[in-house]
Amino acid sequence: MHIIKKENKKNIIFSDHTLINNEIDRSIKLYNWDFILSFLPSGSYLVGGFVRDIILRRLNEKIDVDIVVPKNSIEIGKRIADKFKGKFIILDEVREVVRIIFKHVTIDIAPQISPSINIDLLSRDFSINAIAFSLDKKLLIDPSNGIKDIQLSFLRTNTKQNLINDPLRILRCFRFVSELNFNIDEKLIDFIKKCRHQLKLVSSERIHYEVQRIIRGKYAAKSIILIKKFKIFGYIQSENEFKFNDLGKINLAKFNELEKEKFLPLFFLFQILDEVSLKEFTFSKAEILHIKLLNKWKRLLNKKNIYELNENERFDLHKELESILPSFILFLPETLHKDWLLRWRNKEDKLFHPTNLLKGDILKKYLQIEDGPMLGKLMNYLSMELAFNRLNNFDEAIYKGKQWILQNAPKM
Image (tube, rainbow, N blue to C red):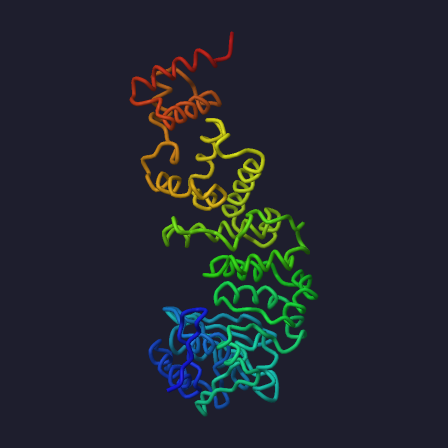
């Protein structure tokens, strides 16, 4: 048996063709989709990410499978979906690309577009995705030496035309950097620099999908640095300086795995897209609001040291950023990370989780105050008093509320 250890990723990959063939067969049975093979005509191939991930030994619980058939892909896909009760979707009617969704497996089926599978493979985005497995002969087909590139952690394309044919591949390159920690071929970098403005021809929804994958990758910081360096989104927004001094030196030692998974993507998204671009790329209102708030408080930190914020500013910061504070903490001096995270994790901390000791109805009853701006300001005042440990119980809240009304009520 011949295997290669990838020292840079501390991972074992398959490199021997026989081992890869055996693992593909094993995985088909393991993920329980061998039932569809009898519906595929002679001359069908597994291609792309499934084969690549077999070699990398990184298949997840839920897998995506790409299959190339000689022709009639829509008819074949519909027959499989009907027989095994899968959800059937036509992704591209012109190119006859279909998708069948089962519980743990999503299968895309497309027709072969060239006389030879080798020509089809050479037109794919990167060599690491240009590997096919013949379901008839149980053999690998690798005209671009993609297996070798996987061994070298190397991203390479055959021609510039492969990027121009589908400019989304420019962005997909950075997804593979983020997810696989691959390095980019110098020629590919030149192609990207020359073709990056072609991204404007790609639908917003497709860009949105790739960005979401990029910011969630294990090596997202490396990818974000390159996106900024090559000004990938310069066609849609002005390229400002980094919003973080050195993304390559982020220290996440104080963050737990759940916090990294939940809040790092927002931090990385903040680095590459502004609010207008987020809207253009169909990000949610919540994501756009979060980026807006991070921008607001990061701009303030550019003018003021965190230690110089007054009580009102500190309270407003925690009130506005409460739900996403770990995304913001990375902008603070590292000496504060542990303390801020510990306090944020403590749901009883009244500054990091602002709350009200008394509800509005209680204040209205005891203080004879009506609904309106005054009530809102009073509740904010009492919440701030509670946050800074100047309020302990019901009686104190009523007393301070009365005093505040006397000082702030409109003069008759």
